[in-house]
Length: 196
Image 1 (cartoon, helix red, strand yellow):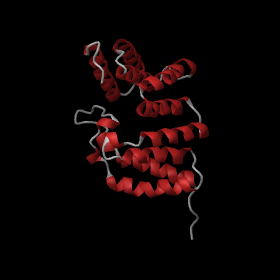
Image 2 (tube, helix red, strand yellow):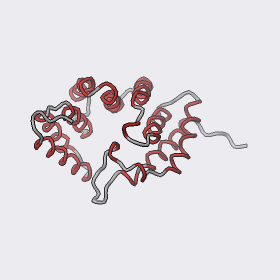
Image 3 (cartoon, helix red, strand yellow):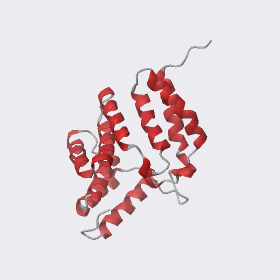
Image 4 (tube, one colour):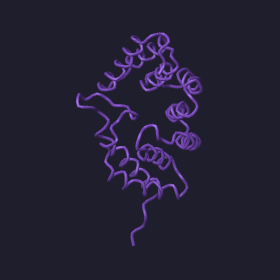
C-alpha cells in the first residue's frame, strides 16, 4: 500500500482543481475580466469541483495548514450556486485562521474583502488604508483596486476614481486594465448620490 500524500499536498491539488474549474468563466468573449460575483457559474467545471471537495475535507482533517485553508475558501466559493449564496461569514472565519497561520499583507487584504462582504465596506476600509501605508503593497494593483471598490460602494466616487487611477498605473494584465478602466469610467460618470 502506497503512503498517503501529505495533507498540504492534497490541499494544493484541491486548490488547483478549484481554481482551474472556474477558468472558462473568468473572461468574456472579448477577453475582458469577469468578477467572481458576475461569472456565469454554469461554465464552472462541476466535475473538477466534485473531485476537489473530498480532497479539501481530507486535507482539513489532518490539522489545517495554509493550503488547506485556501482550498476550503475556494470550495465555499465553488459551492455557491449564485454569488449571493456565498457563505461570507465562514470565508471570513477561514481568513482569520489563515492570518494566524500565515500572516502576510496579501492575506490581510483578502480578509478585508471578506470582512467588507460580512460587515460592510466601512469596516474594511481602515484595514485597507493601513495596508496601503504600512506594507509593501503600493505597487500591487489589487490593493488599490480593492480600496477603490470599497470607496465606490460607499459612494465616495472621487476618492474611488483616484484609487482606480493608482491601480491602473501599476496593473500589468490587459484584461484587468480594461476592467479597471471601465470601473473608473463608471465612478466618473455616476452622480454624487448614486450608491450601489
